[in-house]
Amino acid sequence: MKNNLRSSDMERFEYIKEKINRFGQGHLLSFYNVLSPKEKEALINQINEIDFEEIKVASSQLSTPPNNSKREILPIEYESVLSLSDSKRKMYEEHGLKLLKEKKVAVVLIAGGQGTRLGHDGPKGTVSTRKIYVFKELEYRH
Image (cartoon, rainbow, N blue to C red; front, top):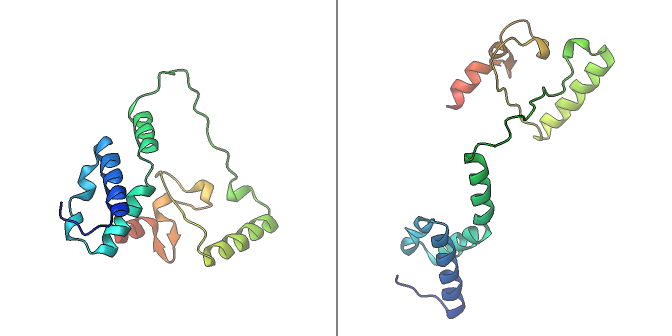
């Protein structure tokens, strides 16, 4: 590999190279030679921040089915919009709008089905967000 690195930079590069090769991630440096010195430094810094050991453990846990077949799956707690008092509903709405304006909220609609718990009379996909139905919103984003 052609380099114009100082000794300490070269040592750091070799350390990173050894680290990523140990985890089968050598391809991360495939285009290292075509980067500018600033881009090389940024790439090395980014790679250095990655906890490959944590990723390895997480990947192993996610790809290995649990042995505990007696695991109990419980429904999550929720509060139906329909059962809220007007004052509580207004309080939640005002707080929610404040958080939306501050860009501190995200909405994920995971399942289909009826929108009853959302206070909507119809399938969840027909709930309107920003005057666009959820199904249409997903279509625009993909």
